[in-house]
Length: 285
Image (cartoon, rainbow, N blue to C red; front, top):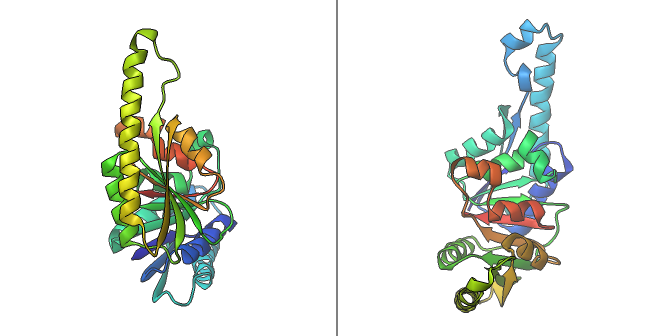
């Protein structure tokens, strides 16, 4: 398993690195820091604005980035065979994504500063940009690092269940966990009386199928690595999943991201869950 983790000098970034070591035992880890100088990234622009001490400023920022990834390295367990570090002048999110593609990473790990969703859509954040543009599973770490013993897996349909099940099997957690497999049957808050009967029939059938899918997934995952239980609920998918995740150490979801403009303006169920969940979230693509 190859993992890339974004590191800066924030407590959230170091917590993400520490959480990675508690959750997995990968063969390779690359810790990266993109040194983003903003409008002063270009020496020509810095010169045009007459920035005094530009070379010293640039050197200090690069050195600070190198120190950050080296500090992150000390937070990982000694039993990980290969831990490399990389710090260069680059936009932070792009640097993470570019390196993930270069090493064909199986997982990206980033911490979140827990901005509000509106703030992230307006001003952006590294974790938000990575989540939007990543082509590989992404672990968004919230809060302090802690041992993971209880995991909630929220699945949406059979294809989603098969994909997430395959990824979890191929990339096992460091320690066995208690796993709850959850499926949400969407509810309609307002249903016209003339179509109520049809909706009830659809809802009952959907619930039956959801129960069958979680049972099949539970059977496939049950074993030494997972002690499995199942749960089927009705409600708004984002709200219901986040409510069910209370008391869990990790929430695992699949991604069915929207396309084009809708993806950036509205997000998706998985993105909504990431923003609202009270625990760390692993988005499997």
